[in-house]
Length: 116
Length: 117
Image (cartoon, rainbow over all chains, first blue to last red; front, side, top):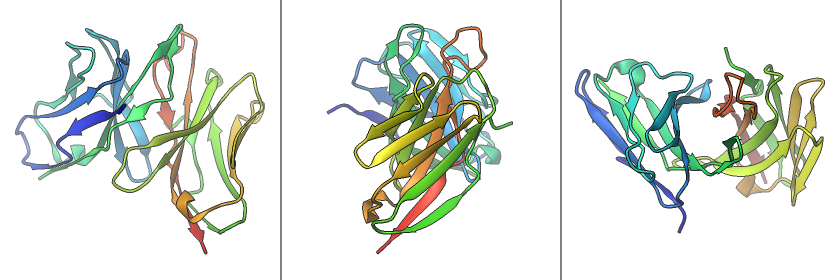
């Protein structure tokens, strides 16, 4: 079954304690990205990756890091989480056609992060 | 500054009637538009898309209309069913590599649709 798997689904942490949210896809997609969903703001892109070792900033990258060492995995790293990073996070993947991402993306089920 | 806007946060419609969801965008480089549907505790799922070379795309009960001159698109759901109750996100992307939007998918804030019996 084609899927994007995020872990954990729920996480409560304290300010400043480094954390990683994992994302894995089994569709051999080149393109992967991370979004955060906040009330009234919809989904905002944090980082994206067009392929292994190729990553780029989205619209709200501050306070986040990513890596793409393998095609299937795209972890999101919060080195020093702060309360304003409390949000619902989604990982997504899609294939690339031609010069741009084929953006019918598959999304993971989300990670609800609370930073206290 | 949001480049994709859904100005109606919620919409209530009776079962069997038409649901019309609206979306406006500001970036003229956007050339591909999508609608996603999201249920609580799940990730968004792709619903329907339209390329800027078309003004209409239909898939079963779902039709998306694009008005490029007005930078406006809409999603029509006919007839609406209780299972359509969800949050609907409009999204847009740009193909040209010279634009800042390339590789990114810009989302609107979403519209909560409630279909009542």
